[in-house]
Amino acid sequence: METRTRIRPDGRVSPTDRVRGSPLARVTLIGYGDFANPDCSDTYRTVQAIEKKLGSRLRYVFRCFPEAAKFAGAERAAEAAEAAGSQGRFWEMHDRLFESVGGDDARLEKHAQDLDLDVDRFLREMRAHVHLARIRARRSAAVRRGVCRTPAFFINAIRYESSFGLTTLLPAVQAAAGELQRGERRDSSGAVAARRLERRRISRQERPSPPY
Image (cartoon, rainbow, N blue to C red; front, side, top):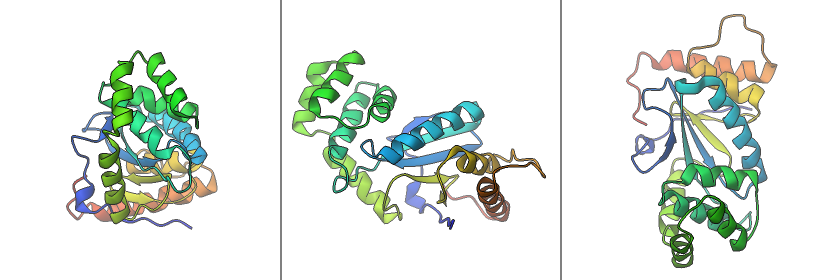
Protein backbone atom coordinates (compact mmCIF):
# COMPACT_ATOMS: atom_id res chain seq x y z
CA MET A 1 0.00 0.00 0.00
CA GLU A 2 1.25 3.47 -0.87
CA THR A 3 0.62 6.66 1.07
CA ARG A 4 1.97 10.19 0.86
CA THR A 5 1.88 13.07 3.29
CA ARG A 6 3.34 16.53 3.03
CA ILE A 7 6.42 17.63 4.86
CA ARG A 8 5.43 20.25 7.39
CA PRO A 9 6.59 23.78 6.58
CA ASP A 10 9.54 23.37 8.96
CA GLY A 11 10.77 20.53 6.71
CA ARG A 12 12.32 22.92 4.20
CA VAL A 13 15.86 22.26 3.04
CA SER A 14 18.10 24.28 5.34
CA PRO A 15 21.67 25.58 5.03
CA THR A 16 22.79 22.89 7.50
CA ASP A 17 21.38 20.02 5.43
CA ARG A 18 23.69 17.68 3.54
CA VAL A 19 22.86 18.35 -0.11
CA ARG A 20 24.06 17.13 -3.49
CA GLY A 21 22.78 19.05 -6.49
CA SER A 22 21.46 22.47 -7.38
CA PRO A 23 18.55 24.23 -5.65
CA LEU A 24 17.30 24.86 -9.19
CA ALA A 25 16.89 21.13 -9.87
CA ARG A 26 13.41 20.03 -10.95
CA VAL A 27 13.18 17.41 -8.20
CA THR A 28 14.31 17.42 -4.59
CA LEU A 29 14.58 13.95 -3.08
CA ILE A 30 15.00 13.93 0.70
CA GLY A 31 16.16 10.66 2.22
CA TYR A 32 16.23 9.69 5.89
CA GLY A 33 18.67 6.89 6.53
CA ASP A 34 20.59 4.87 9.09
CA PHE A 35 24.14 3.89 8.20
CA ALA A 36 23.78 0.69 10.25
CA ASN A 37 20.58 -0.46 8.54
CA PRO A 38 21.21 -2.93 5.67
CA ASP A 39 17.98 -1.80 3.99
CA CYS A 40 19.39 1.72 3.80
CA SER A 41 22.54 0.33 2.23
CA ASP A 42 20.35 -1.15 -0.50
CA THR A 43 18.48 2.12 -1.07
CA TYR A 44 21.81 3.96 -1.16
CA ARG A 45 22.57 2.06 -4.34
CA THR A 46 19.12 2.84 -5.70
CA VAL A 47 19.64 6.55 -5.07
CA GLN A 48 23.04 6.39 -6.75
CA ALA A 49 21.39 5.00 -9.88
CA ILE A 50 18.69 7.67 -9.80
CA GLU A 51 21.29 10.42 -9.40
CA LYS A 52 23.17 9.06 -12.39
CA LYS A 53 19.97 8.87 -14.44
CA LEU A 54 18.65 12.36 -13.68
CA GLY A 55 21.93 14.22 -13.30
CA SER A 56 21.46 17.95 -12.77
CA ARG A 57 17.68 17.57 -12.71
CA LEU A 58 17.88 16.05 -9.20
CA ARG A 59 18.85 17.53 -5.85
CA TYR A 60 19.42 14.91 -3.15
CA VAL A 61 19.28 15.68 0.57
CA PHE A 62 20.37 13.08 3.12
CA ARG A 63 19.35 13.29 6.77
CA CYS A 64 20.77 10.97 9.42
CA PHE A 65 18.09 9.06 11.30
CA PRO A 66 19.96 6.57 13.51
CA GLU A 67 17.77 3.84 14.98
CA ALA A 68 19.98 3.04 17.95
CA ALA A 69 17.45 0.71 19.55
CA LYS A 70 17.46 -1.51 16.45
CA PHE A 71 20.98 -1.31 15.04
CA ALA A 72 24.22 -1.44 16.98
CA GLY A 73 26.57 1.39 16.12
CA ALA A 74 23.88 3.50 14.45
CA GLU A 75 24.63 6.69 16.36
CA ARG A 76 28.40 6.19 16.17
CA ALA A 77 28.21 5.90 12.39
CA ALA A 78 26.09 9.06 12.20
CA GLU A 79 28.61 10.85 14.43
CA ALA A 80 31.42 9.71 12.13
CA ALA A 81 29.61 11.10 9.09
CA GLU A 82 29.09 14.45 10.78
CA ALA A 83 32.67 14.54 12.07
CA ALA A 84 33.84 13.98 8.50
CA GLY A 85 31.38 16.65 7.39
CA SER A 86 33.00 19.16 9.73
CA GLN A 87 36.10 18.68 7.56
CA GLY A 88 34.15 18.97 4.30
CA ARG A 89 34.04 15.23 3.58
CA PHE A 90 30.51 14.23 4.59
CA TRP A 91 29.57 12.60 1.30
CA GLU A 92 32.78 10.60 1.07
CA MET A 93 32.16 9.20 4.57
CA HIS A 94 28.47 8.70 3.73
CA ASP A 95 29.44 6.48 0.79
CA ARG A 96 32.01 4.51 2.79
CA LEU A 97 29.57 3.81 5.61
CA PHE A 98 26.90 2.49 3.26
CA GLU A 99 29.38 0.44 1.28
CA SER A 100 30.72 -1.17 4.47
CA VAL A 101 27.81 -1.45 6.89
CA GLY A 102 28.70 -2.24 10.48
CA GLY A 103 31.94 -2.10 12.39
CA ASP A 104 33.35 -0.57 15.53
CA ASP A 105 35.22 2.64 16.27
CA ALA A 106 38.42 1.15 14.87
CA ARG A 107 36.78 0.76 11.48
CA LEU A 108 35.44 4.32 11.65
CA GLU A 109 38.97 5.54 12.39
CA LYS A 110 40.23 3.55 9.39
CA HIS A 111 37.64 5.27 7.19
CA ALA A 112 38.90 8.63 8.46
CA GLN A 113 42.47 7.65 7.64
CA ASP A 114 41.53 6.44 4.17
CA LEU A 115 39.75 9.75 3.47
CA ASP A 116 42.84 11.73 4.55
CA LEU A 117 40.98 13.47 7.33
CA ASP A 118 42.67 15.15 10.24
CA VAL A 119 42.38 11.95 12.26
CA ASP A 120 43.28 13.55 15.60
CA ARG A 121 40.47 16.07 15.17
CA PHE A 122 38.10 13.33 14.02
CA LEU A 123 38.85 11.23 17.11
CA ARG A 124 38.52 14.21 19.46
CA GLU A 125 35.09 14.98 18.08
CA MET A 126 34.05 11.32 18.31
CA ARG A 127 35.26 11.01 21.92
CA ALA A 128 33.53 14.25 22.95
CA HIS A 129 30.32 13.37 21.04
CA VAL A 130 30.47 16.85 19.51
CA HIS A 131 27.75 16.13 16.95
CA LEU A 132 25.49 13.79 18.90
CA ALA A 133 23.10 16.37 20.35
CA ARG A 134 22.45 17.83 16.89
CA ILE A 135 21.93 14.36 15.39
CA ARG A 136 19.37 13.53 18.07
CA ALA A 137 17.64 16.89 17.68
CA ARG A 138 17.28 16.38 13.94
CA ARG A 139 15.97 12.88 14.51
CA SER A 140 13.36 14.22 16.92
CA ALA A 141 12.36 16.84 14.35
CA ALA A 142 11.95 14.09 11.75
CA VAL A 143 9.74 12.10 14.11
CA ARG A 144 7.53 15.16 14.49
CA ARG A 145 7.22 15.23 10.70
CA GLY A 146 5.99 11.63 10.73
CA VAL A 147 9.21 9.73 10.05
CA CYS A 148 9.32 6.66 12.27
CA ARG A 149 11.72 4.30 10.50
CA THR A 150 14.30 4.09 7.75
CA PRO A 151 14.57 4.27 4.87
CA ALA A 152 12.10 7.10 4.29
CA PHE A 153 11.82 9.46 1.32
CA PHE A 154 10.08 12.69 0.37
CA ILE A 155 9.82 13.69 -3.30
CA ASN A 156 9.24 17.43 -3.76
CA ALA A 157 7.82 17.64 -0.22
CA ILE A 158 5.49 14.65 -0.68
CA ARG A 159 6.03 11.55 1.46
CA TYR A 160 6.77 8.46 -0.60
CA GLU A 161 6.04 5.03 0.85
CA SER A 162 6.21 2.08 -1.47
CA SER A 163 8.95 -0.39 -2.29
CA PHE A 164 12.31 1.31 -2.57
CA GLY A 165 13.70 -0.59 -5.52
CA LEU A 166 14.86 1.17 -8.66
CA THR A 167 11.84 0.03 -10.70
CA THR A 168 9.51 1.75 -8.23
CA LEU A 169 11.36 4.78 -6.89
CA LEU A 170 12.86 5.90 -10.21
CA PRO A 171 9.49 6.28 -12.02
CA ALA A 172 8.11 8.23 -9.06
CA VAL A 173 11.06 10.64 -9.19
CA GLN A 174 10.74 10.92 -12.97
CA ALA A 175 7.04 11.67 -12.61
CA ALA A 176 7.87 14.51 -10.23
CA ALA A 177 10.25 15.83 -12.88
CA GLY A 178 7.52 15.55 -15.53
CA GLU A 179 9.64 13.12 -17.52
CA LEU A 180 7.31 10.14 -17.90
CA GLN A 181 5.74 9.85 -21.32
CA ARG A 182 2.12 8.79 -21.71
CA GLY A 183 1.90 5.14 -22.52
CA GLU A 184 5.43 4.41 -21.39
CA ARG A 185 5.55 0.82 -20.17
CA ARG A 186 7.07 0.13 -16.76
CA ASP A 187 7.02 -2.37 -13.95
CA SER A 188 3.46 -2.31 -12.60
CA SER A 189 4.33 -1.17 -9.05
CA GLY A 190 6.54 1.59 -10.40
CA ALA A 191 3.88 2.70 -12.84
CA VAL A 192 1.27 2.92 -10.10
CA ALA A 193 3.62 4.94 -7.90
CA ALA A 194 4.45 7.24 -10.79
CA ARG A 195 0.83 7.83 -11.82
CA ARG A 196 -0.27 8.62 -8.29
CA LEU A 197 2.61 11.01 -7.70
CA GLU A 198 1.95 12.67 -11.06
CA ARG A 199 -1.73 13.20 -10.22
CA ARG A 200 -0.71 14.70 -6.87
CA ARG A 201 1.79 16.96 -8.63
CA ILE A 202 -0.82 18.22 -11.08
CA SER A 203 -3.36 18.86 -8.33
CA ARG A 204 -0.79 20.96 -6.45
CA GLN A 205 -0.11 23.25 -9.40
CA GLU A 206 -3.12 25.35 -8.45
CA ARG A 207 -1.84 25.77 -4.91
CA PRO A 208 1.34 27.52 -3.71
CA SER A 209 4.11 25.00 -3.24
CA PRO A 210 5.18 24.50 0.38
CA PRO A 211 8.74 25.58 1.17
CA TYR A 212 11.27 22.80 1.47
